[in-house]
Image (cartoon, rainbow, N blue to C red; front, side, top):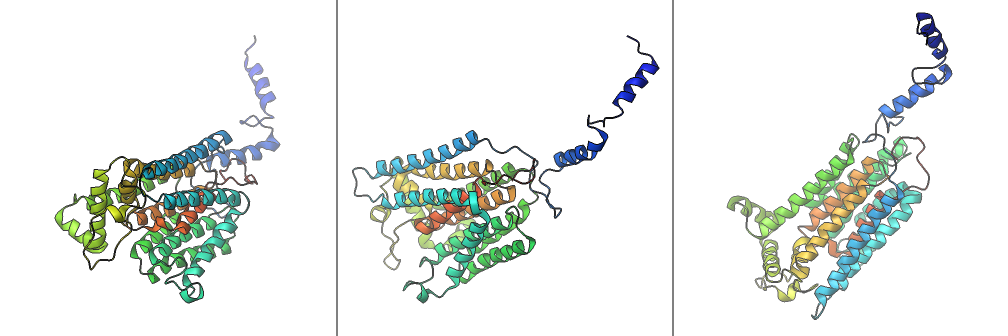
Length: 394
């Protein structure tokens, strides 16, 4: 074959009608735009960027496997509750109701999230804030609205903070609406101070900060791993205080902030878990099996800590199932087709709720568990309408 310079020129001339990308000259702009889209996926018109590079939508088979794993965890938990209650005068209805509330909330969130995710998140956050601010005598004869227990109300406000932030990060949210939703989120966090819950205020503030930082996160897995580490630290600190494993000075300082009766309940929960490590003492039998507190201390039905209560009443497997449910939630968020800021904000709100649950029995309120399931379902829902820009994670 002749490979003279003239032949090379002929070949180059024949290829002159193509761009280096292999496209005709009139399509060069489209190719360049496509290349820019690949280099900067997830870009929004306002110049900001979603958190992570372009990725394919999670395959339906994988999403179904994650959902199936969650249902298996909840089903195993329900069966284990009945096993722990067998042969005893126990009351498993409370835990079963909580599991039902979480499942129903999650299912409702998946359905509503597929159709009106932003509207549901925004409306839910506004409703919670208004219910808390409404005077109690307008709703019921109880104390603080809407649940009658200020720490449970504060836990709802933490979830409302996360819901408002998630709505603000929703696709297609106008600038004015986004600003209004951020104000609602800030109002929900500040309202926790009106209820006297410093822990909930700290959790709500952390949700706001995490949501703001989530806009610059390129990989959601790293953020979710950080949330898991924070939850592990909270549970470890809870256990360390319960077994007096901390230095004397730090232990006394924490005991002063947590109150001595609460710490005494934690000690009793660890003692019962040590005596009954497999099945515990039975659901809702902590008050019957624990050593009575001093007469000047009000009787407590729970040890004021969800992990320690499960360990005492349902043994080590019960506490492990709580951890498995939390890890499954993070896994579902990781595989969610929602934008990364939405995913990380929801994860931060649910982690904040988990931290509150380590120092109080807020998960005993059905409304709180249902709201947590609803938020998780909304954050993991798959929109019916596909994203407008190809190559961008919705």
